[in-house]
Amino acid sequence: MITNQQLDLYNQAATEVLNSSKYSGRSRVKLLAAARQAALETIINSDDGLHLPEGTRNVGAMVLMNSLCNKLLRPIDGSCCQTVSPPNLIQKLSACFFLGAAVVFVALHVLGCNRHRRHATPDVESLEEKKPATAGAPLGPKAPFQALCRMGVIMLYFYLCDRADVFMKEQKFYTHSAFFIPLIYILVLGVFYSENTKEVKLLNREQTDEWKGWMQLVILIYHVSGASAFVPVYMHVRVLVAAYLFQTGYGHFSFFWLKGDFGLHRVCQVLFRLNFLVVVLCIVMDRPYQFYYFVPLVTFWFVLIYATMAIWPQILQKRTNSSGIWHLGILAKLLGLLLIICFFAFSQSLFMSVFSVWPVSKLFELNGSVHEWWFRWQLDRFAVIHGMVFAFIYLVLQKRQVLSEGKGEALFPAKISNLLLFFSVVSFITYSIWASSCKTKTECNEMHPYISVVQILAFILIRNIPGYTRSVYSSFFSWFGKISLELFICQYHIWLAADTKGILVLIPGNPSLNILVSTFIFVCVAHEVSVITNDLAQVVIPKDSMALLKRLGATGILSLFVLMSQLLTPGA
Image (cartoon, rainbow, N blue to C red):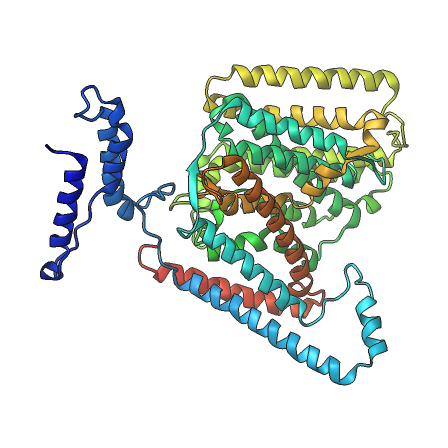
């Protein structure tokens, strides 16, 4: 009788013979154990107890094809039967860099402790230990190396999570409960942590941080639950991305209009804070810059806003006084920017040819093409200029004292406030109905660039017209808003997995506990990266112009070396 026990004995004997020393010069033979395991699990569903169900044969065939093909094709979401790629030269150099920073930090720490023991009196030591650190104060010589050491440990965790076979990955399966129940949880927490704002003007700092925070949490839940498969949720999340870009236009326009600081130090500070984590991840995780699409997007728009405001004539609020001619000048600049956007939007071939020129293409290519960059850019192409126009109108009205921004006061007179609130609520409901009626994402995306601003403005008016809503904010959402950029980037590798196609599994067999533990680590890492970025920005971007130019030159040479090494790498 051919029993399972007999089959095990036959397989064992065959394996021993084929892998014996007599055949050591030939390729070693391996049994496809996954097919046997699938058969044992599904034989109960067999019609006669002998022939396997069709589904079992399909599983065996799929595993066999994966074991043969995934090593060669290397699909982005195929961790099964796929060997881990060895680190390339740039990854090895980055590991040596972080290791060197750790060695220097330890050496400085040991030398500092020894010198401190020899020369410091006990009273001086106690005073130095109790002396509080001043925010924004210059960092000591050890601080940069300590920050790099912490960053190195974090990057090691990133690599182990998403570039090694240490942790498992699982697929996403969308259900309405998986998306909406967490939303209710965070809404309750956000309302519970309500506090009074320090200032009550429209879109104050606490409020914008709160806005970024709850939007980021919604986007995280959207990603981990795989809600992009549900078109109404997809369209509402598209509005949240447009709102981020709207804030980019609003915030940077307001800064340049009010402060007039177009110096190199300011530009480098912003670019460093936006791109530091992504550049490090591109090197450590061997991913193109465009893979983290949102950072290239906000960086591109910041450069465009800076160019628009910095070119002659530089029109600032303190220079305009009450003259309307200067206001017309800034409107002319905004109109020129709008025409450039429309020109590129209606000529895809020109857009792709411009961004396909080397070395610019290295910043915008994904899988050898700039098509993904085109899709991301044109989808929210008007959001930034909408934010700039809104900031201009608001600041002009504020200077002319048209708005009532006192504590508890409505932004406009009662009749106007009620009318605007009514239209805002109607806009919200109308958009939701329209998004729910869309049949395909393509159909919705065609209308999205033109109508997303209505939803954004409706939210701003509802949030700011009543004086009591403008005077409170959620400290819970605001805390997450301060690290929203780091949360968005870190999720790619240490919360999601397989380049966002799956979910990281730290604790197998217990999905609820796994998501709690991985989320806690993920949030802690994002906060730590934000602190490290702020610390290094003080060191890397000095206020002295000559020192800054020298470092920019060194950075340019290093970037050229990285680009050339990628060109010389086979298969790059």
